[in-house]
Length: 95
Image (cartoon, rainbow, N blue to C red; front, side):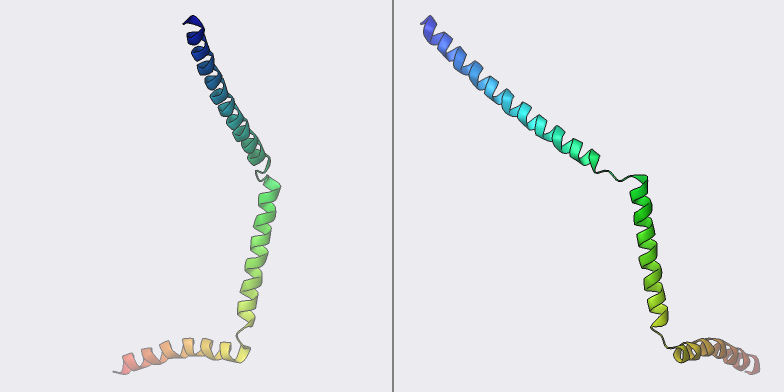
């Protein structure tokens, strides 16, 4: 009877050790992932380079958009933007 009880206790201890080993292995994996993530954190230089790239792309898009409107059409739109309020003011003043 004592041998059977010892065998049951041994099996239970073996199972507990196996579960603990699985947990430790998982914790080691998590720690490894955290170390990898920390190693990949952006530095000040990375952020500055990213900001520079974004600014360059933004100003290039702005320049492309500005250049996409022909100059004559742009001048006509600007002139209309000035003339229309003046005409409206004159009409309102004489009405």
